[in-house]
Length: 386
Image 1 (spheres, rainbow, N blue to C red):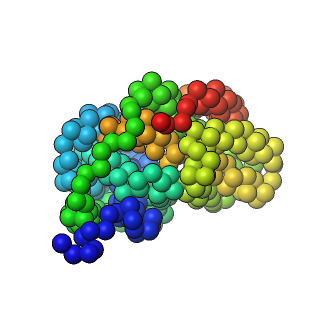
Image 2 (image 1 turned 60 degrees about the vertical axis):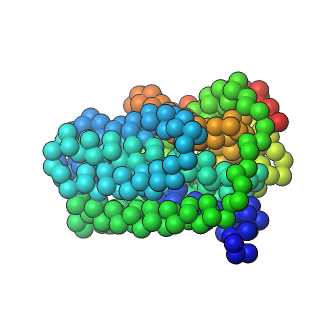
Image 3 (image 1 turned 90 degrees about the horizontal axis):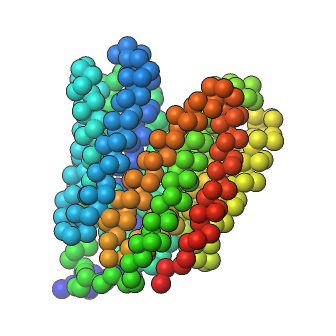
């Protein structure tokens, strides 16, 4: 065996061993981000009602959320290296073909298929990314940030194409997933050739701590979803800004989220995982307070960057801590933390919508400003992994 084949992945620089996983995660979450970006075009081009269009978004959400737990359990029992690449292809096919077919039931089924593809990707990818990251929260933050980059790029890439070509432009997003699936499959083959032994799980499963971690992540997910949903409306309705500036606020908040995910990994390596989660929860309170106090829409752009950073500091750390609490089942832990718990935040948005109907987007943000108190209370019981 060559010297290169004898090199364990953990001996490589962090970016070198995580770049394929981060890029694959960005690709998978790109297709999740394409669905909300395309919903307005389904309304305009297909004359769908708002409720019917919301049903399409829910199809993708449920398709990606519900299967992740059983897929995670399966990924922990069987290696199945083809599962992640196949998931990427199905995610792309579902979104791409949804823009081609005119029948609503068929489009609904295609978005369910796309969601299933995303669900097939996350648990095995989270399992194998953890093995590549070893004990580094910084390395896992690169993997988690890849997903944030995918969400960030989706509207930026899709909007001009949808404006120019209509919904049929969604089919143009199929080839990138096929290419990434090939790259990921080859990468997994090289990794398998390099590993001479399979490292055993380190630590003891702590299901009670994992059960406590889930509501912490759900609370955090509700906050992140709420910020992304109402930030542009807050600028337009409350600060009197243009829709373009509202879109800028959303973009800056998402960019801050990417930076916060990477920063959280470094803080986690330096100060510990549970302390990083508790720090991120506490930092949200002054971040929300600053945004609600500032009335100048341009000064508030600085505040929304800070809010995006603080809202995402615990993101990668929560994923890694979940896998540390269930070291014998990293695929299951990834499926729950990356899938079920995160998607649960989307289910809270109708409640925020009702609040915004009666009290405006500011009322929604005031509600979100109190939610870190719940996250702080829950995270106080988290203990460092053994």
